Amino acid sequence: MRHALQWIRSLFFVGQVYLAMAVVGLSFFPWALFSDRGARAACRAWCLWVRWTAAWMVGLKSEIRGKVPEGEILIAAKHQSFFDIILLFGAVPAGKFVMKRELLFTPVLGQYATRIGCVPVDRGKRGAAISKMVADVKKSAEEHPGQLIIYPQGTRVPPGEKVPYKVGTAILYGQSGEACVPVATNVGIFWPKRGIYRKPGTAVIEFLPVIEPGMPSKAFLAKIERDVEAASNRLMAEAGFHAQD
Image: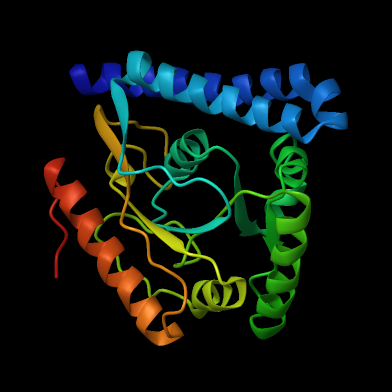
């Protein structure tokens, strides 16, 4: 019975999340049309709403750990579900994402992503996509200074699954000359990659120690994979999930 009630709560929660996206997007649109600040305010308001309603509708609380980065910096984050995007954007002062190009054509989301300086990537073109990404990141840094968030595995990875870390993150780190903050998470335990059901608990994102600029690409990529995976496994273990070796 309890499980069935949680399914019902989850269904209502997910429905209102997308309804709120439309309402907030349309309400802020006149301001966002002429101001990047308006677009960012809309996105932040929606993220805070989702966090709040997740806590009281489905019992999914959330927590931000570690020192939140500011200024021009690269953030290399573990990506398990849509919820880690919400938590990350709501935590940093001026976040923007490297994201797949298809999202630009998503109503509301695509328009606001463009306005806050997100960088679209065509994942099917590999080498050409990386070159264009580097150029677009430089342009975005000039027009929309802030924290650039990239997902080194390139996709949402469910808890317990292993996907290699891609070289694009190391290239951005080397080309930008900026420090990098790795981010670990356990959100996929509670908010899955697909599906409606939301599990009660405490979803966490944790900002790990800063990696200063200048590290060789291969060593950098190995370090973020080691640090992010170890910290994510620790956070998941806290929530009762143990990844298999």
